[in-house]
Each structure stands twice: as structure tokens, then as C-alpha cells.
Length: 180
Image 1 (tube, helix red, strand yellow):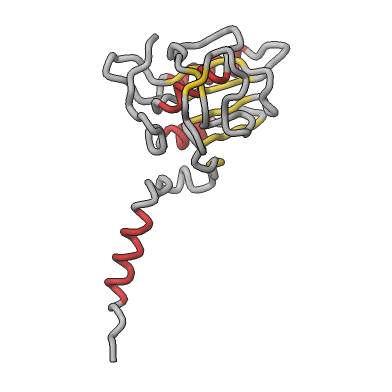
Image 2 (spheres, one colour):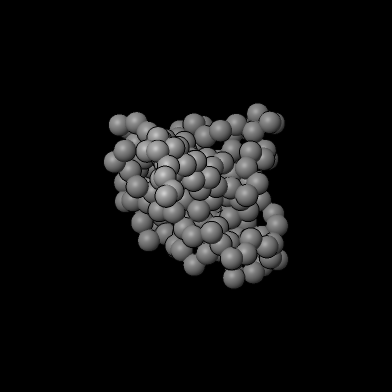
């Protein structure tokens, strides 16, 4: 006759298995209402030429997948940027805040810029996040990390702060500095 493991041992075994899958969601009341989209692990993260349009994971906006070998500076960009480039920023654990406002939205951009400064700082002292317009967004605003995203039609600072708690969690090359 074999004995089954004790309940305590089974709980320990289960919690060890779950922790091996990656970090759990921030465990507090403030972030509990937010569910962030989590894309599957991409089949490839290889570097493409920056003129390629075949980048990303098929999501809109993309949060992982094949990307350009260049990165964007971590600042506020006023012109639309190549998605393949900022995907490389995501691979490094940088946050990307996007907006789609054909008629302009200075208050939304100012709000994103304020939240940009709440992202983690790299070894060079530069905040590891950027803000850029993206006319292909299906919503007015989106916040991205590698494989994680949040989007909406209005800025939700609490949601973006909660998303930033995941910064570096899934990135293949987390913590890398960003140029200004």
C-alpha cells in the first residue's frame, strides 16, 4: 500500500509548479480589477530588417514576435514610428505607451508622458518607456510590455501603473538601458 503525499506537501508542490510559470499578478486590491491581455509565447523573436512589415505576433498592437534590430529612444515621439522598432524595445523590458488621436489629444499625451516617468529606470538613468502615436490602434490608447497589453478609449492611470508592475517579467532581455 502506498501513501499519498500530505496536503501540505501537495500545496507546496503546486505552488512551486505555479511559480515556475512566471510571476503572479500583483496581489493587492488596487490592481485586482485589471486583466491584462497576455499573448502566447512567440514562435520567433528573430531580428528582421527595419524595412520589414512582417513583424509582430499578429495582435493589434503587437506585443512580441519578430522585430527590427534597432530600438527607439525612450522619450515622447511626435511622429508615428515603425512598430517593428518599438517591438525591440519591448523585448528589452521597456514600456511602450501608444495613442491614436487623428485630431490631436494633448491632454492624453501629457497623461501618458507623466506615466512614462513612473516606469523603471535603466542603468544610464533613463526611464525605460516611450510614448508614440500609432494610427493603427483600434482604441485611443494602449500600454504595452513584452506579451502584455492594456488598451482603452480613455486614459486609466491606475491600470497603467498596475501594468508597469509587470515590467521585465516576461521580457527575454529584461532590464536593458534605453537611449534618450
